[in-house]
Amino acid sequence: MLTYKGYTGHVEYDDEAGIFHGEVLDLKDVITFQGKSVEEIEQAFRESIDDYLEFCEQRGEEPDKPFSGRLMLRLPPTLHRKVYVRALKEGKSLNQWIAERLENAC
Image 1 (cartoon, rainbow, N blue to C red):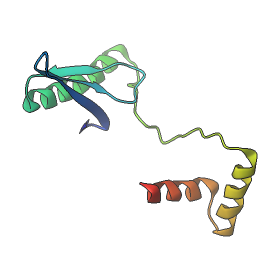
Image 2 (tube, helix red, strand yellow):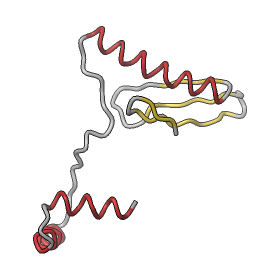
Image 3 (spheres, rainbow, N blue to C red):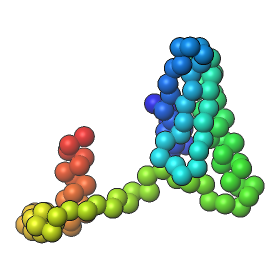
């Protein structure tokens, strides 16, 4: 995994072609990159992000951002109620309680 300016890239190696190829994750837009060495793939990743951001700026568009911090979650009503009550008992908002549990799970 590569990271640059808040974007994350996933890289795989194609042994038949002898190249690394990658894609930026979690965007609606598609950003790919490739290189023949670790140094080349890292540079290509950064250049692809910079090119994408420049392209968006030239078009007057807001670039797609990974992970806005919003998470839509569907729960069975009984579980939703249990979690809500538990958060209240601990003096926390539902969002805070869930975020803490997820952080501890990671």
